[in-house]
Length: 270
Ligand code: 1HA
Image (tube, rainbow, N blue to C red; front, top):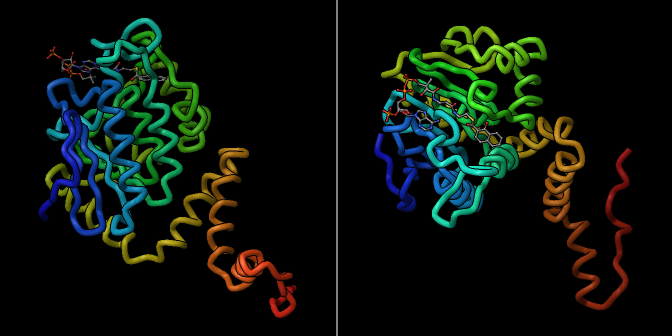
């Protein structure tokens, strides 16, 4: 399989193969810990994936085979957040989490090695997670003076249940791939040398499906959990579909033609 670069970045690789885009954190020397720049680049790549009509599914991963992501880079953690070149403390990974959940295309976490701390939360918020047999999962916040009480707590609890989520955060233990599979934290475990092949096979299956159906389903899964923002997403898709109809176009055309709209021929379904 060949991956063609979409755009050059400093701390991530952003490539494409057919309808699949791959966003890969490229800081293997620190187990793919993220800085504000890493996150900013991932956000930009995600926006490109959203806009590009030839991309139907996104793989999120990390380079090197030893780590998916080890969370925020503790060496740039400053007073109030993670600090980049502009000297501003940021927690911009929270924006990335929201984007992963709201982009209307499936995002698949491809996890080899460590998925730890804020890196663990990143795989949790992905639609699907495929793990290599060397994957290890866990939260570290209470060890290193941090916590993610947003999706990192509430969505994790939706995924693995309240008791298990509290155990994960209160004990900060690490779990292997089989344990992750058993608790429903990942969808599948495969040998490391089959990880990309399997993930791509899953993505290709997804790409054969109706993109609008997938879009509606993703926002439907989100709707209940995300309150008004979730309903907004689902309703936005309803508006998209309505705009495609002759009935809605009659309203726009009548306005532009300065006449009264005639909706009489459109059915009033039971
Ligand atoms: O909680 C949040 C947030 C919450 C709300 C809003 C925003 C948030 C944003 C971020 C976060 C967080 O991510 S907090 C949690 C931060 N991450 C961690 O606490 C994990 C730190 N790393 C480890 O515990 C271990 O490295 C490991 C269990 C993943 C792997 O251990 P191992 O195999 O023994 O490797 P190790 O030797 O520790 O790591 C290899 C190299 O990578 C080391 O550097 P070296 O000594 O070779 O120079 C290590 O320092 C570096 N490294 C690993 N993880 C990080 C890191 N350097 C900086 N930051 C890291 N997270």
